[in-house]
Length: 310
Image (cartoon, rainbow, N blue to C red; front, side, top):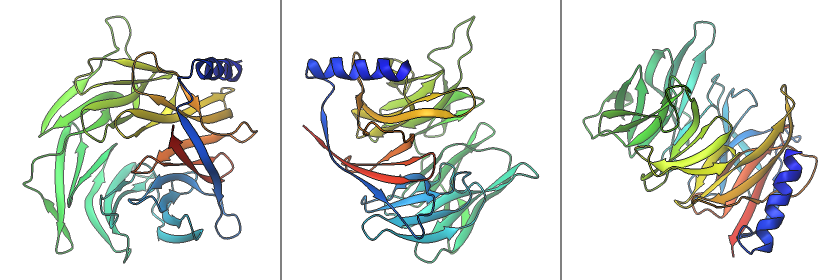
């Protein structure tokens, strides 16, 4: 029923010439080895390769989109869960999870040499990681840290703390030059709202997040709230558009999902980008120039879509 309603919404928007803002130029499946399963793609700078992992976030590798080759980086457990990539593409910050003891360590990985440097060891929880130049910023137990690697060792950085958003205890938290602010635009005296899938727009002026089943955009204080509808795993395409997945499940597993794009403004309607098929398309990533979208299916097929704004 939900799938039918989404289709009707997209059709109605197209009739008014509004939602069909993008043309899909191509949608290419990227295969490696013996059609190995690939999950959680994230564009590297330049948009010619993807950082990928296994379904359960074990290990990291890089897929060359054109040559369809795979280069392994690490086998660390949890490495594929929200890794951070430096702007020059030379460095990855990833987790090494010790599930037995419920501890996490952060490592910097040199993409060329695969050498690892410990950034922080044996912490109990961490969500978002930010990279600003050579500085790595993260928050632990309500406190923001910034470290940089010098001569193969991570040391505390004296640079100003990056502006970034994370989630702590299922609430949005914005760190701005070391100042911690809890952002909770939807909770009331009788309704406690949880948040996930948070990110900051490239120009660092807006927040994107999911509360309940729906995606929202706001300013950094949670004001000027824009409701985008039922979209999950949203990511920014530039500062004005959001790409995400519109999925269905039966309470146990996904039964359908497609990739959509929507303008981050009130009254906007989503445009479905992926072709109608039985495949369940998940967790999109957008290239830096906004012209490519990568996603995986539930059975580990990797696709790269090229889009063009009309």
